[in-house]
Image (cartoon, rainbow, N blue to C red; front, side, top):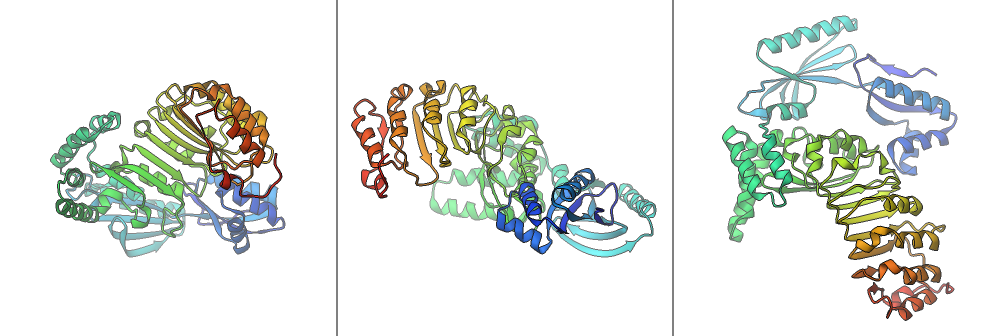
Length: 484
């Protein structure tokens, strides 16, 4: 099979569109694997012959084309995506809000535009007879920009990065501080002296946090929001309001990100792309909390490519893996983590010296047992284990979990389950017999549903396991099922 192409060249990135084939079920499985979409969404892509992957390098695109041919007897269209070069003045007083020039390249076509980040006006276009002629035109245009003192960026976010004042030492002081407010004030003053609009944003954010009256707080809130609008291009580049939900502010910096699936048609249109864009912004250089639940692809690639200093400041991580295995991520890049919530299959040990709270939704408890057995978590005090409700889960894995060495260092252990399957007497007995649970301040199983016999066993054993927290009997016996 030969991939259908549009304006292909070695410097382009590519999108893939499903065209058809004889083994649609296999094609749907491949789309689901590559996108993490559900069955209905993947089937819709195949049925409607839609684009399902973008931004692929040539080698990766060809690899996927070959996989669909071999595994699904299907044909993909391999579409060259447009590339851009943007001319900007790195010393302009307006910084990323300045007027810009842009050259768009798509196959043999070039398009010239003027405007600002996120706001472009097309001026003219030209089609060339071959790539050499087109490349000469690009080189000539870039030479004209250089003669005017303009630098060149490939993406609008690069303009933001290049025109933002940065103080790595001050930023690191914010990341390292348990209470970063004083360090943020120093950083805000420095930004204002540098003439960076982020200094104004920081000053307003710090002032509104210290407001002593509701009226003053309301006035400063409005001024803060107005500054965000006025300097939007410099703060957020091309990201629109739809991409900027779930931001937590402190001292003029975004210290918390909540990145979920984004159904917007505007790029970046996937959770992973939005995450990559946000983590590249100077305004997000001192993150302390990160909640990631993207819809497309494995975002460990994004976190793995981040600046180590940025990740080193993160204290809280809520990582919704959606059936993916988080073993590909190097946890040593986030040494200051204090609270982690994970979903998925964990088979590699943790080495997190400052972690105090861990919540894990387990698809394969056996793998989790082995990972935790060899983990180094000296400060762990609160552990929450959420079971997927696999019918094969039984007393042996539970007994092994409750016998882990790290259990004795805990203050609180919480057990939950995603479905309403009743826990039998065997599991209740494992709780009662677990000697390592006795010293804990609290063993919370109040969200679990037990059979009548299992619940009675726990109630009868309450004198020897007084730290066990049960749910109401009426709730736990609400289903008429045989006793276990």
